[in-house]
Image (cartoon, rainbow, N blue to C red; front, top):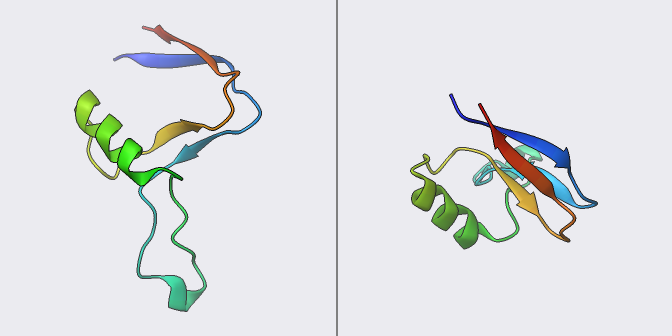
Length: 68
């Protein structure tokens, strides 16, 4: 199994998914990635499913390396 080791997360890095649409009436906002098209494009390029989470990096200073 391949893993990703995060050395520095940066100031505005977060784990995001494609959101939760259709639940606003229950008080749950859609949320999800800020750039939905980039999220889906990245998922496709990596061969991931559309609903899998990804790391969203807004302001840089993110350092990671593959391990395993």
